[in-house]
Length: 597
Image (cartoon, rainbow, N blue to C red; front, side):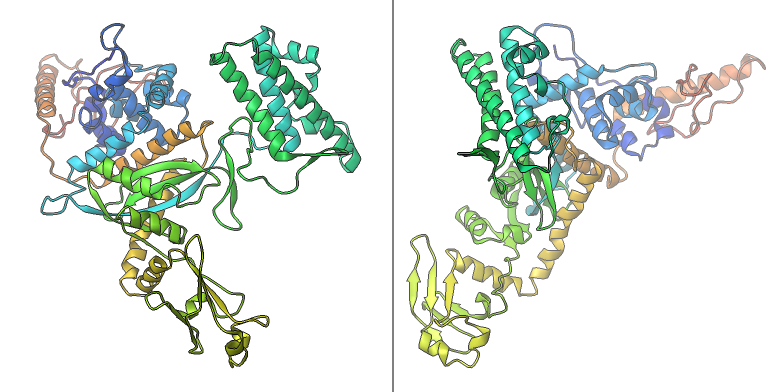
């Protein structure tokens, strides 16, 4: 059942008593000031049964805990400990000093419910809702801004273990054997030993424990042949076991998933030859690199920078550095994949229209420009440079698409054009004209005439090159740096390494990091002089009266009563290091309270 926090703040809650000590201007103090404003319990009602059961831990408190966990970069266990004992967390959560607000399993289940119910972006969207309420997405006149959004990607290292073909096959065999052992009601070790797969179970590395001469090619081929034979035999056992299972059942689904992984590894890495199996040369397209995380892929950000995992795609408002949309792509996906979807997500998340989209040259291909043009949108990105091995590149020619002519650097013009069935085509210069040209050595190799390929989106690329050469492009180049700075902030918040297996959980990690990046920016740039919350003023008034009462009593009760109140900037002494104060403070500081009380 949905648990809710009351609107009234308690006099002895940590943010009331120690908000000044932790710092009202710190991120923890800012979160405390946003209680009831940033997260509302009703917004998470879809995750709970509303008409029966015990009241849950308020989801607004758990959402705040997830934000703090991402901000501090701690594990679930450490997050629970900090909520119990860390004064900063208690101030941000708004709980009393002796409260233990949630169990570790409660936090884990709340996160799982967000992912399962496709609400992983709920906390991220909340950060943008707060930005809208603060007027960050409006002009000075109060009108809704038209956004200029910058896009970019960065790599996320996957959590699954990346192994070579021998160990990858071994992991696939163990995964399928575990399912078959479960279906037969036996423990994995006993079933595997009985069926002849014992050497694959309990070993940290199949290849490392193999007693063969790895410098001998024949020995390696023989060992690989034994592994492939075991994999084939296990797959046949899986086919037999499937005939006894109900179609569409959970057991069949589990069996098919494990068998599919093993079959895929065999297909992508093994070449069946007459003299026995061998490891394929090269890397298969879309190669599965880890049985433990099948969604990981080989990826690269440049010719020299390679990684195994996923790609984070990010959209950022270039006027207010707010992250407006994120997505997790396959590690081997092009950077521009899903670029239009990021723009559409930005509009859905912010309620603003995206006027222009900015990107680097990875977004400057003709295909990406065509996708945006078909959608009636504008993308500004540097056109990838072209080269021709020391000869005149294509950009040295004047291509008049309306007249259907091409003019070379020497001034020769041709109308000889051969269209391509897929779009574009090729301009051809006469061989005799090129043979007599004084700059032939800088233009043509071989005995034929020069040819110039016309891209299917040549008109879009020409317009982009012209704009790229204009002074107006400098402003876009400057604006695009905003997304690089925001990605650097996301890396600070831990997105370089995935915390969990699977793209869905990695997406949740990215969304939480984006939410915290937005919230820390909003907290750091919060406008001064905001009106005081009436509830806080009321509590502050009670605190003042209580302070006055303590002062009066201290004068009347004689020398045995404390005559000084603790300094509001220091914690009361404790009986031992690490323990929370056992004596309630007699000093409170809130908006609306006079300092010193």
